[in-house]
Length: 302
Image 1 (tube, one colour):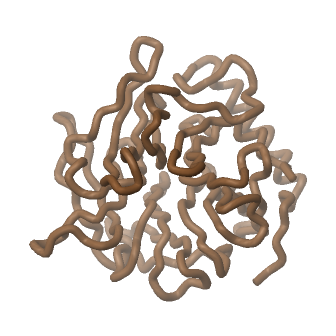
Image 2 (tube, one colour):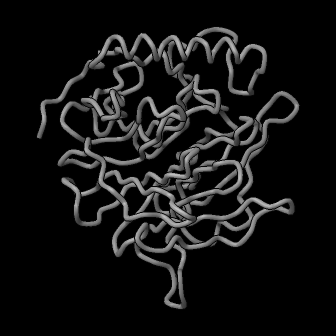
């Protein structure tokens, strides 16, 4: 297992990324989104308290491209079935979330929305054998009249094991985690390319460890990946980490730092559509809520 580095490995790359983030923040002033703050958000902020973040368990956020619609997972307790919820920003405030019309009967979680399709993980049945014992990857089309019928993604994306937490890119690539054989850990991050409308054989990412790694999200400009890991170097039970792409290859992994990572769990990361903010869930005890923080604040953190 390679040596673990807490610091971001290339100062030049970080300086460039910071400049891009500042440019993104400047551009955001002209086109404000409902999640933007008037000042730099130095510390994590509880997102939409009492509306989105409640006494229930919330995790797995994903935004519409305009940032005015939020999809996420909610469950009353860990014993209860998770469902996919949606909240709209209207009249200057986030509105009470509602269950998506195709969700609520079976275990559905970890949505990822690309503007046209919502990918998610589910235990819903794929035949007449009833609800499955583990997550598979599904997709549903957004239509003018609402939503289509969820479709089970075929092999080689789905396997006989757990396939969960999908994340799609502008190129149509699909990132997800799986406990299938072939990776160094019990759960690993995979990437599948979309070629002629079909996904290729998923490839295990080179920065996986012997521990649990998953919930990966790719920066739209493909500069970095943020992901959840329980590897050596965590500040608690499970942390968020970052890995940069340098000269076409993935660099050493770095912990995102004490600004967000705690002795509890930080998980299910997501980026705001303008790339300025990191959203994630903080799990302590039996409660998980969504938080928001300035992404540039997390770079070069010890």
